[in-house]
Length: 167
Image (cartoon, rainbow, N blue to C red; front, side, top):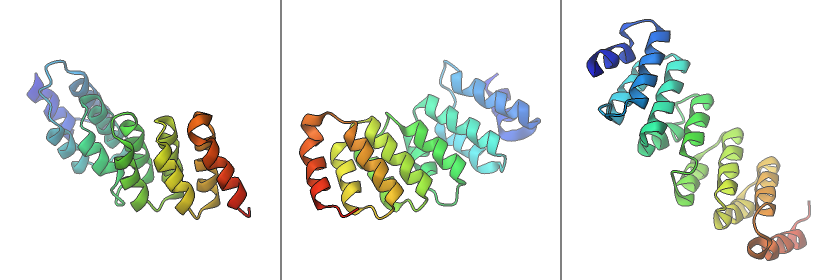
């Protein structure tokens, strides 16, 4: 049955069937489906819904390397990269997220990464964003993310920031 599902997942049926096959492969308890097979499906299609289904399957299978590659690919549409970043939340560390942040040029994705950093309480990385970020919206999001952290860890940094900013 696995080979039949892989065949449909690779597009030998209609797109709706393809998405369902990908979903079945993702929840398959025998873990026969590899990240490489899922990435082949991802790369072979132009259908955004199919690619989103593959990203979901990669998340379920725990393939953070493939998700990281999708999130960091400037050739992928923003919607796919955003989904991959969401899928990485809680599975990668702050340093890996900062690697994505440092090379990201899309404002919305930078905001999303700052949000993820805040949700995992990556105070050092958020402080770094506050020090280097030029976009006022991303900077405000980083300051808000700091403000949501325990005051014992961020109070001094926020007071210092308040004292040195002109805006």
